[in-house]
Image (cartoon, rainbow, N blue to C red; front, side):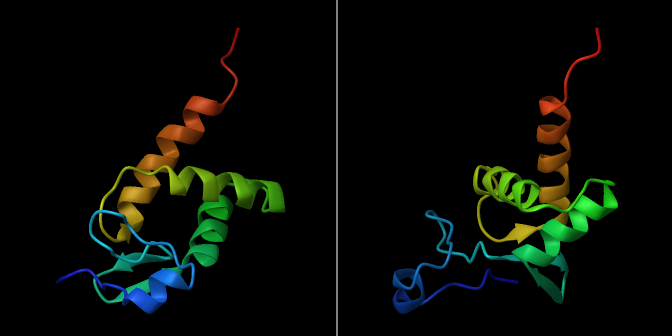
Length: 95
């Protein structure tokens, strides 16, 4: 399966794309034939990890997702792994 590539008009309209492949980065593939918009994925991630769903939490998650080094389309398994590692690293260390 090839990644869905945007036309130049979509790129100009401000949709997130991967600079290397041109693949859309505003959708998350949760299975081979199902994709979610980024907002739905973020809310699902936060609630499944028992975090509050707040505007600040959503903004923080979006910033982490923007930094995700995965090339091409975003897959749920890749994002879950990346976010779990990053969120765990940002928690205060026990003394």
